[in-house]
View 1 (cartoon, one colour):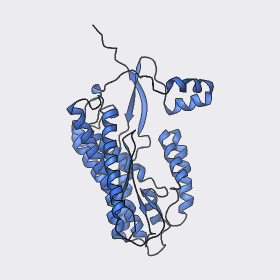
View 2 (cartoon, rainbow, N blue to C red):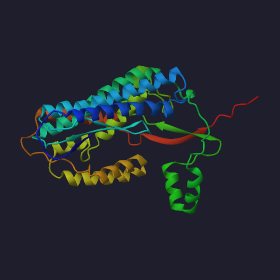
View 3 (cartoon, one colour):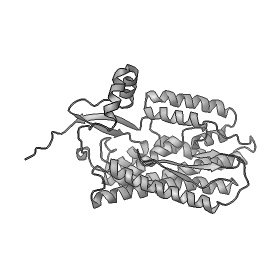
View 4 (tube, helix red, strand yellow):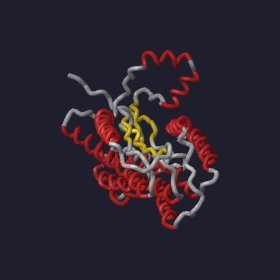
Length: 336
């Protein structure tokens, strides 16, 4: 994602900015590695196989993110933008990162530059994500490999339970965000298949992967790459899709973005994650897009790139990427 700041003359990165950017990249890589190993790896980082799996996920996902950001950076520099280096964002939960941002320090000179800069990141990231899926899907394990266990009480449950019990509205909100697990069952996260994953699964495996299949670390990184690509191509404000849409139709950008942010908030009914993204865009001001010059008109090349970006959005976007469900838990192991 790229954000616009104050105008500045194009220049190379300062040494301090380079050190900061590299430091954030390393910190984010460590965050992704530890998050996968501690949460998604199943058994933690207790053996060599788990460490290798976490490393494969981290290297693949960071490669996808780096390709995305370098796509923006290289094309933006080619079009004369002044901009920062990519700033990666570590986040020790979910998948270990919130992605990265690049601050644009000058306004676009023409609509072609804005569109090509906005599309370059998702297109580069999508290619890497598709390759990761193609490499990782053959190693995907069937649903029988799922390791289910009854839910364990969370650290905050002792003090949170009385608060929720005293407020039916808060309890209803909590149940909506995290549905309770019936007795005797185990919680399971179900990942939706983007269209590209179904297509590659049919080509490589003979059928689309089951939604309960256990993705290999590389395939899971490809799935996360598709998720981030699809979200970035949503045509709102300073998301990549917003840049593309604004370059195509410069007038009425703010009205469109306001409407789409509202739709994202309403989309929280379908998936609570859209509520988070809608609030994030609204509170940070990122719903306000860039106003490029009306002239010259878009070139044929830019229109072709926009069509490719629309195709990638169609292949990667998932209206409800993740949902919580429950399955019968296995009986506890007998002890002797």
